[in-house]
Amino acid sequence: MSIELESHRRVACVGRLWLAALIVGGLCVFPAIARAQPSVDTSAEQGAAGRPYPNMPSIAPIGVRIEKYLDVPASAQGPAVDPAKGYRLQKLGSGLYMVTDNAYQSMFLVYDRGVVVIDAPPAYSAHIPQAISEVSDKPITHIVYSHSHIDHIAGTKALGGNPIIIAHEETLRLLKRAADPNRPLPGVTFSDKYTLHAGSQVLELSYHGNAHEPGNIFIYAPSQRVLMVVDVVFPGWMPWRRFALAQDIPGYFEQVEEIGKMDWDTFVGGHVARTGTHADVNFQAEFNRDVRQAAAAALAATKPGEGLNPLDKANPWAGFDNYIDRVAAQCVNTLTPKWSTRLAGFDVYIWDQCYSMEQSLRIE
Ligand SMILES: [Zn+2]
Image (cartoon, rainbow, N blue to C red; front, side, top):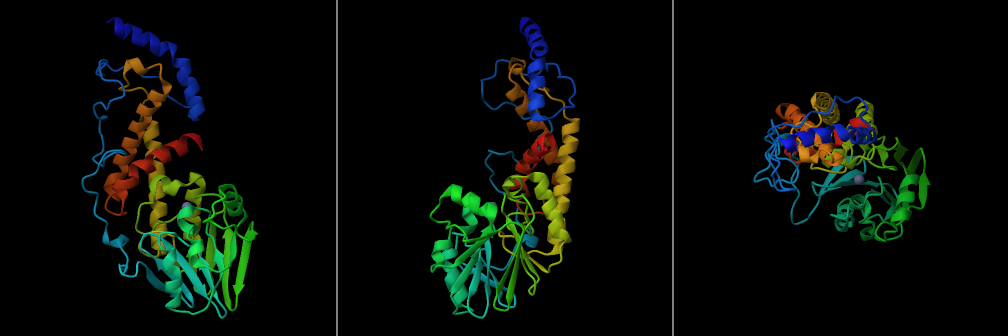
């Protein structure tokens, strides 16, 4: 009894602390702090996992080992990679090819005097010269960086020679800061648009703002009608965790919609086993909208403090962890029936998407 009375006094005393934390968290409309629930175990071991939350999803949360992930649907699969070669070459149009190991994707464009390479993922960049040699004996004269990330461009040195490197000016800034010898600095940069004329071939590079990261560009080959935008749309698949680490989630959502409205025939996303169609982009845009709606509904329906151990009432971080976990659980439950069999990797990253979505809605 004395513990209970004490806990209620603490609830009253820390109300202002909570309020401060909520303002920091950006959530200004918030119901009253719930009273301590009588069912919590005040003798539990500190820091140890307790009983699951009510209505816990069957999809395992982050940090819990999975014995068998959901099967990858046929719609997410692509042509096989020959393991002896370690890459697959796919013609996308006149002189334009995709190279892939079915996890990463890059391109190259052959013109009358040379070859323009677009991205050099270290996962298979040592094979890019061999892939080029299947269709051309011309030298690599240019490299285009889609963005600054290691996993897409740090194989550049394996291409050899001394090609002209083209990137967005924000990519140059980030690469100067990184000072990574495996990511040579671009010698040609632009801020808005850059058209590369290579013989009779054309590549239109353009910047559409921050979404995945500053400097991530759209690369369009007009005569082949191919659009490449890396780390934004994942044909057939759930985006990589936390909306592919988008640095601006509202900007990321807008960019998916923008890609869907653009005029192209083939989409290259930089990842997964196949190229994309407008149906793939529209499908991901629909998923994004569903996650936003599910997280917004969960935020509106979830009361802070429910089930929180009264001994934790003076710990606003703990209160938020408990609250956000329950928001994410509801978000996952809402999305599972529609999406678990329609996007590959749903179970792998849906908790991540819900956590990042609720955070974006509260503070962005
Ligand atoms: Zn990236």
